Length: 388
Image (cartoon, rainbow, N blue to C red; front, top):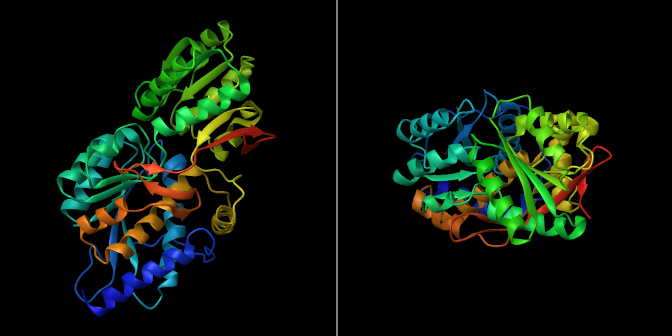
């Protein structure tokens, strides 16, 4: 490693200590587009692959906020190292499909020769792409996928979202204690791994607590009419309705439930502010289990919310928060590894324990899954606030 490269990694270590959470004060107006696919001798540029749904049904809910979270973190890291090496993205559009994500991973690995890929977004995509990264010994970090067991697919793969087996038991424990529900209904997307895994976990935890599941209804991603399923649920008068779904279908479910006069509270994992706004009054009282919320009143988190809002003219959601945190975690690992060798980066990531982030103290467990404090939020007066 030459002197310039060593200086870059040493400086990365310093700025990851100083930046994360409270020094995010610089702005950028355009996404940085990469021109250099890999670090070369005499250069301190590090190319990072990014696989995002820039088109397709998930572009607005996932692609835009994830891109912006990356952009904000990238600007903070690179601005702090103005006279030295820079992080660069090579971004591939997965088109919101599993096939697109597989193609993007193969292109980044075999054509661009990256040693790190950030993505993909969904659990269904992650299930198919993590084995590709593992086979080629390329580090892959998904900021947002959370179905159980996916990080256990290999040693080179990591995830930043709280997984189903952490988030759902914690959320049900808190809400069941507070609300005392005994009769539940569930509704989920049968075509999506995040949703099928989530519904299975919900029913497992409810059974363990003696809560009766009266009915389980399904739909398919892309559906817009949920009236038949919701009518059957309403007829049984459950105390609570659990929904496991990706973002595009959530407002429709809430709105149509409201139109039918359903009074039971909806519990929907990872409900965002944008989805609340799209649902209007129908979202009032909805509860969500998440890893992050704008309502978390810590200096680090409030600085992130303020800076993101000032940069992009809108508040961040949990997908933006996860991608922002992902890049800062990677910067810390690069600083510790002093190398772009995937094995060194993998070992540095695996060693992250109690790292200060906008989520709070963050660690990776033995499988490469995230460990930090879950949050339970409720919609009150049109805003997601802490459930108390």
